[in-house]
Amino acid sequence: MANMNPKRNEMPVQEPSVRNRNFDEVALGYTEAQAIDEAKRCLNCKNMPCVSGCPVKIHIPAFIAKVAEGDFEGAYQIISEASSLPAVCGRVCPQERQCESKCVRGIKGEPVAIGRLERFVADRHNATADLSAVQRPLPNGHKVAVIGSGPSGLTCAGDLAKKGYDVTVFEALHLAGGVLVYGIPEFRLPKSIVQREIDGLTALGVKVETNVVIGKTISIDELIGEYGFEAVFIGTGAGLPKFMHIPGENLKGVYSANEFLTRINLMKAYRESSDTPVLHAKRVAVVGGGNVAMDAARCAKRLGADVCVVYRRGMEELPARREEVEHAVEEGIVFKTLTNPTEILGYNNPDDRRDPKNGSVCGMTCVEMELGEPDASGRRRPVEKADSAFTLDVDCVIMALGTSPNPLIKSTTEGLATESWGGIVADEHGKTSRDGIYAGGDAVTGAATVILAMGAGKTAAASIDDYLQQK
Image 1 (cartoon, rainbow, N blue to C red):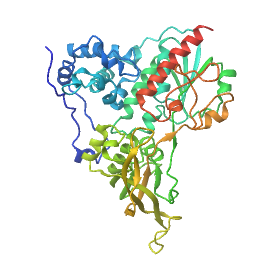
Image 2 (image 1 turned 90 degrees about the vertical axis):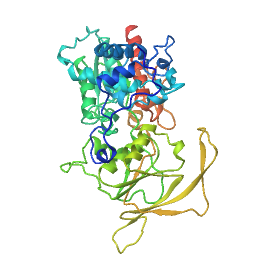
Image 3 (image 1 turned 90 degrees about the horizontal axis):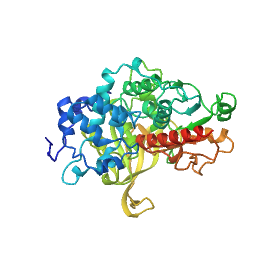
Image 4 (image 1 turned 45 degrees about the vertical axis):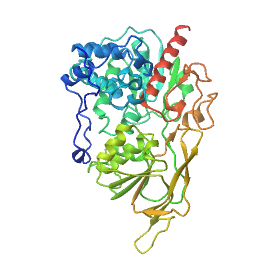
């Protein structure tokens, strides 16, 4: 019998006063009974509007129907036909703006909790699956290199491996996973989950080479010429941080969110024994309003700081996921909206008062803003209020202003067309200006979401397959 409750099943979570002091996962996952009850809210629409909102085109009504029947493994098999990283997507994909935004149940109530059901199904499968029993496809004799082990690279590698390609993924860092391991905190995406998804791909035959910086260790031309790869996919992401270029950004205690999160997530800087520590600040300001800003703020809170998020627009304009903003507020993080920094203040010692050129952070000058007419992005443009300057008492500033692609690949690969801002030029199929070289994800679009990067990796894999089958 269908469940016509207009409200979805709530996700069990850690209490805010407990979770803001640990790095354990915040969301605890549905029980079997909750998953079945939520699945019964799906109307199994014939035109499947939810699928149109999914970048990797999971057959959502079909997998949810299996959950409603209690056939969780059957549900997983349907998801895995389209997605190589279901346990990841179920946690970090912005379903509220994609599949769930198209759900008919959302017209007069809350949409079906598609992401929560995907997470449940993937976790259930991963808890019992025997990777040693995975059947590898028959080799087709073709060899493909994938640069970058983030969501676009892993998706491309997985789709090609399923077709029998000999795939090697090259990762610059010492652990595979890209932004999934260095960017997203443990409390949102446990690294054991990421590793389990990667283990599933290696069971299919994907090889992963870490500590290989393409463009330094090996060039793309060498991959093709000396190593015999017939096609290359570039999924190197966008890891070059942006700054405001205001006075004081060179002070001790100023981080890019990229560095701060990498130290926390990849290097485990929150542990006392860490070889890569971070400043255990008392008062932290995080500048920015996206998901990365929320991640940085919530990490700083867990390290014991009083944390504020400084954002030049209002709460309604925050680009971060609503759930992440709500969790941050619950955890005690203060939002100073309609506020923009103009200078970071520092000192060398207590007798050397605020000298913005030297020493450590001791404050940040800000101005109040108000929203004017819409800008090119369609959002109302923030305008500075006259005579509104004030100082925030902080000893650490984290800049979470976005990222751009690292220029290493474009600077070492002849004939590879790039945009003026650094992105690689690729068409809708992932083809670049070089024959046999494909690209996708943040390396092409600039910083975006995990699921959009996965969609790009999937598209490129199909294009590479077409290209090599015609050779």
